[in-house]
Image (cartoon, helix red, strand yellow):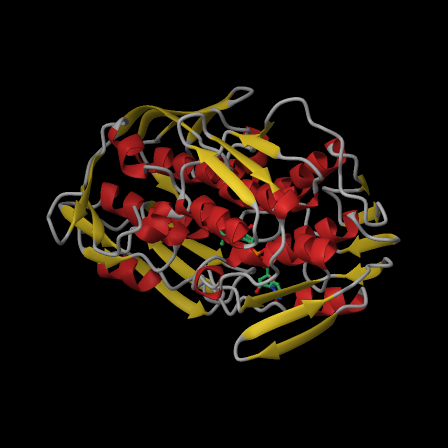
Length: 434
Ligand code: EPZ
């Protein structure tokens, strides 16, 4: 699934219709898996997506001595962290997945130390870890860096107040997880409010944690004084539906839906995106767990500005820019979260889009412009999906390389799009058929 020789070969089309089910959220299951280290007993999660980042996190946990068993058939993962013994994250693996930073909090809470490489992930920006270093130092940790490895040491978290310079999602999550077993009261201010943060807190509270304010900008945690969480949750704890998948399919439907129904989702988690989609003229019907979208005759240009939840999600910026290439007029794309998240523009221009990058955070899209099928390389996970949408709109054939990026966060995406009528094939450039 992650072979670097695999490509998606796509034929452009005029319309797609049918229904597509949303899978479990990558950015929810990864933090839940990390939090399982805080429990005295095995924990099980359901609605787990079959994506390579889950596989990588599972191997990282196993490398720490933790039992982790995935059942793709049942879409569950069971984690038993009672055998956690090691504190060194496998450097070759941890640098491939940004989510490895989430393990700092729980491993410190259990073992008092952790060593990990500079975390990798997407090429969407420098993605520093200063909030993690400063945050844990505030709680009394020592942090050393040697030969590209960070070592954090914190024997006991006696509590304290941390003000995050930016509402960082994984910094909030890892500090929250550490505080849960702490020996005092920890207040995280300017915390991230993403649904995945609130959901993580819900899971920890179900295990007996004392957390107030998750989902707001101030989270207060009263630590268990080193006691592992021991309350048993009845059955498997379900992973949230992926709001970024939901948004991705909503944008696809905005340009090609005739109509497309997105099922198994939480519409209120993508309110900012739906508001912008409606502003372009797309018609949207919403139920409790579904969204039905019909593309309009013409799309009107709109401006988008990304920001922390509940603002327009940065992960949907590249996707929406593809839709804006088909909208009449000029649109401003303002990416406020990451400084390198406009890298996809070059390849879209190569396909015929009229996009001008004004500075690392702003681009101007003028449409509508016909797109031509081309050979393109996906620089990151979300731009990869944006190129799939561009390939489905373009005239002729597109070949997308580096599909392993897309497999990190979208389960068997080509099969699910084929069910909507899309002509997309996974092809291994070596033996010509995947
Ligand atoms: C999470 O990344 C998500 N990943 C990202 O999704 C998402 O784009 C991002 O949040 C924003 O919503 C996971 O949850 C695994 P941040 P995270 O810390 O936590 C700066 C995807 O495609 N910053 O909220 O790493 C940072 O550079 C991925 O699924 C520091 O300066 O993002 C950025 O400008 C991509 N110092 C801003 O904060 C730090 O120590 C927000 O980043 C940490 C972050």
